[in-house]
Image 1 (cartoon, rainbow, N blue to C red):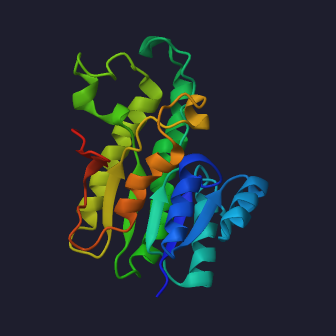
Image 2: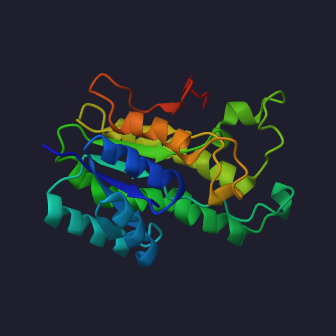
Amino acid sequence: MTKIALITGANKGIGYEIARLLGEQGVTAIVGARDEERGRAAAERLGQPYVRLDVTDEASATAAAKWIEQEYGKLDILVNNAGISGDITAVTPSTASVAAVRAVYETNVFGVIAVTNAMLPLLRQSEAGRIVNMSSELGSLAMAMDAGSPFWDANIIAYNSSKTALNMITVCYAKELMGTSVKVNAVSPGYCATDLNGHSGFRTPEQGAAIAVRLATVDDDGPTGAYLEDAGVIPW
């Protein structure tokens, strides 16, 4: 039976590559995107379905889940890929505005909860449900406090803390779903050249997508509640 996947923010960048790579494995990879024109165009290029999904709008997530239920009756894979970097011009945490931090959390944190909660009944219908949350090395508390880490100077309060929060969200869902067919993991794609960072990353979106695809299709012996990159486990 064909697996059904939903990838949020899949009209470009890493999300698009995740959808493409899953499609190459025979998965029906639904392109979830807020912008209908861009979302439909991406889905057409991929030969995949599209559903409008604004992760910051619970009603949008509920409507997307209803559409998936009507079309497919289940969901096997959810990749919470949509994310924003927010205002990174603040030099220090003390110069960041609360409004700017809140805006990042709306997408990177609350959006993940809204979409996951909307899709979870469908994931429970799968024989092997998989949730993959796109995190970052910048969410690692251990690496953030390591003066020898390349991330020491990247003290971006909104984005970094949102990914730390996402890691705990991953753990919380993994604990709730322990013993079920649904596995939940957080992954870091590495520093990829995308719109998120002005295409300054040294990895390609395809390279960044690989770890998400691996966890989206992991077998029953695979991990749950883990924080992973290509090279292995990332310290919390």
